Image (cartoon, rainbow, N blue to C red; front, side, top):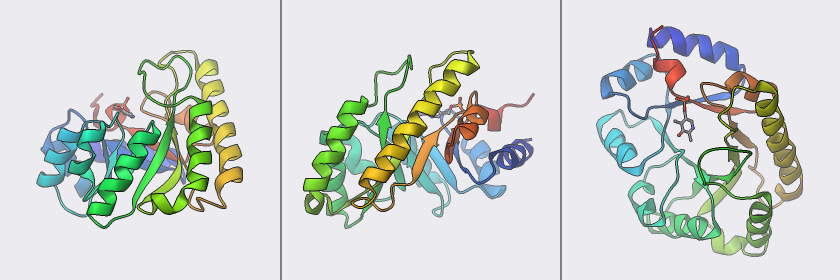
Length: 220
Ligand SMILES: *Cc1c(COP(=O)(O)O)cnc(C)c1O
């Protein structure tokens, strides 16, 4: 069942990259996804990420997709593949520091706060631009960071037109920032948007990475 869902969703995604969100799922369920060939997994809590990293095969690429507290960065710094949820300059600097300690360059996305999204996390467009401007002048200080793009969540509403509009505005900002900052951050190319309820809309609006949990694991 899980393998069928995975296959169907992968076909719907085209070239967009699928991150399977494993929160609240059993190790057995995750192993089934792994056995079906999936290697990118996402978690929204550090402790869960840690436990799963310890228990599952080591060729899994782990994505941190939830709010990250600065004092917890050290736990995931040795292995995390991509942090989607950078929402402050302080957090970015902390990631850089912990990455330096373990001699890694950690890839990150900047999280934009969109619409009526329920979480209070993510930056305003203004904060995001300020962070990027700061990074231009402090690139040497960020030698253990690679800013690779943006992440955003649409409002949790049934109104497809609204969701569509929010994703479109995120894509527009992404294109703008990509154009402006890619001389400094040449890998700025990832737009992480779309979850189980809205990934089709997100893809239509230009997403190239989706984070999907329930649609993979639900057994209709
Ligand atoms: C839980 C979660 C998802 C996946 O949600 P589903 O609706 O189960 O697909 C995606 N992104 C973030 C940040 C999440 O916390």
